[in-house]
Image (cartoon, rainbow, N blue to C red; front, side, top):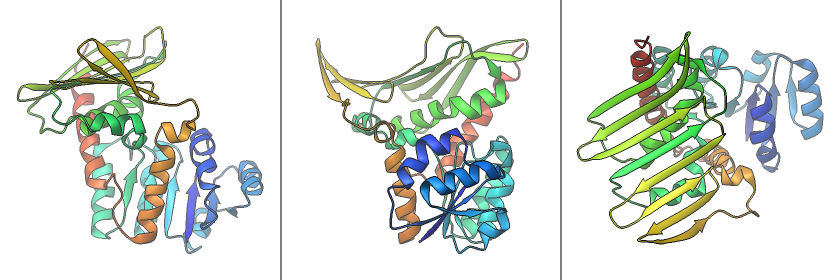
Length: 301
């Protein structure tokens, strides 16, 4: 099986190439506009190199990983799908909801995979939290230090992980959404989103004017509470007892964060012609919620 890799930035090099390099059963084809980087990485991993995108399209690849800039996603993903190639793309699919909808429709019409990189769905500690069925409350915080940003980029580049993880862990239809945040001089400093369903609630928090870099998820159940810290350690609390239930120093980081499992799910789905754990339609719902959040935050003064 032949697989393409488009874009060779930091994320591709740190999170994807080390996992893909272990797959001796697959022939990989690289493309990036940076010729120096293409030559260096191609030589390091002994992957096939392409100097232009059309050459890769005609190489016989069955699927492709798209790690280029978000601004380039629409054009690249559209061309891949039109060529009958299954696609994995870094989140977000695009910054604009309508173009994400268009690509989702195209993938469905051509019966192709369009998978978005929501790695937290595959992280072992979040999979364990998912086992706490029928939670009455889920709270997720993903905070950064001194990093306010333009509203759309803030939500679609970063907070989208919070939205998608809440959807994964909070298995209810959303009746109401409440959005609040702090915006100053055109920059968003923090956002809080409440997703309400009947008597249950999911709360997503991102403070990018925080004194620390952290990620914390708490899932509340009537009999116990699960807490995941930094996509690594898991604690289960019952009454006054707290037990460490997941996370090991020996576990590789890319496995802890779900990248290894997610990458292999896409490759297996392409090879065996089935849908991966994250479908195009499912990803689109996350993008639709993010668009609603952006629209509400843009009304803030």
